[in-house]
Length: 640
Image (cartoon, rainbow, N blue to C red; front, top):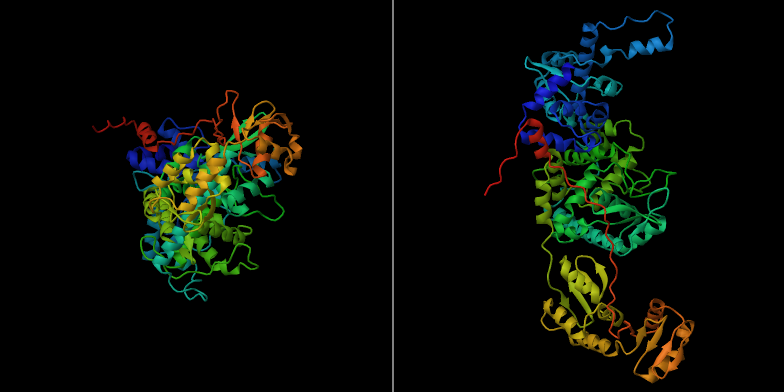
């Protein structure tokens, strides 16, 4: 086919870096087709109906209008040049009519002179210099995205099925800029004063820090107790409630994070004899070693391409999570809304923010305040916004998710949001990675220990510090600073894990920013250790032993321990009717500090089990290597 030949030749003229950018831009739709081994196969994949259906959603109004005009001219020329079947006779049957309608000329890609495209738009009343310049820019953008290919003699070829794909859309008059598409914000009432850059940065930093903490707690909860999925798919309501409580966020946002973590390969779905469960992958351990800012990069990248608005559930549907989305318009809607927010507020993705726009809450009684913003978004992504049912609700939830992720605040884009838009436009994560590194400070290695048995970390704690404090104390708050509280039960937890009192004091002193530990904390650790292990639970189904005969007599008379059925078989040995686990739990609930003992007489170190998926991680595609292979380039030798 001539069109595929033209596109193949155009792809062959690209540098490996340019072709890699194209592969990255269309990675999601291309991943649904067999990997191409030749440029012509890539051209066929780019112009397949399934890929086109997704790619055209990312076009702005000028690009879509130029593509539609070119496709119409191409089809008209193809019909004139083709020697297809003659029109059926009047009264012909349905099959004859459909055969003629689907004849080859309607699926052809006849080259169209660029001058004819300009002339067609000029005939519609758009012949000004600004319009002509916009048409040229739109054509170049179509070339860059692979939705059109230039020939050597000044003509342009578009995919054969383009007319069938977008021919029925009412695109309206040619609008070279969003300002001509709508002037709703030119003198909009209710606009706030320009947001202060420092305030935007602080708001984005707070949101990013809260997000990083929620992700860590959510993954930690899954590592200890994987989430069970229903046979119909998705975790049960009780699992969502448990994980939301552990993460400290709402249930809709918990569903959002679960979807994004699944897309980022930080959790995986694994089949077990009892059903399917969701648990962290081995990539979670590497993720814990990253700085706080870089931990957010895979999550934000996953949000950009996620085929669902996870926090939005249409009326009558059941909320779910951990399922592959089927809303192909969701990514383009995000792009359009964020671009519209920058346009409507006058914010430059490279410069200062403009005045904010009113953004009602997703559950507000009326969302009409979003109508002007949606009108601007319809210029940036017409097919994802125009004539979309429930567009106000979808937009409100998209903006709420963006605020939760730190991209939007005070009705405008934050510095992180502007970096996100630049990264999406350039198909390069470097701007976003740089913004994340500067947004969140490096993790802290020390804590402030106070006399009220608390430890305060005035910022994000390192993985090692967080693990040490979580072992010996209970986490209380996660605002701008993280607080842990020590108690007898939390110290016993550290002793159960094999720490001695002296070792625990030494470890905590090593991470103390204030020097020696406060006396109340030192006394608590030593006093807990003094009583720790006075009672011994023996694996016998089970036995309890202690050198303190009076203490064992006290246990047999304790009302709270009646269900254990304790009885003395020796002055220093009791027998329990329960297994060691329930016996330990009952003794601890009654305020005692037992230790588990092995058959050899040594203390058993108890550690909370952690779970990891055994499924292999998906390796990220090296698009530059694929581009070099398709172009026939060898890998460049490594620099010594």
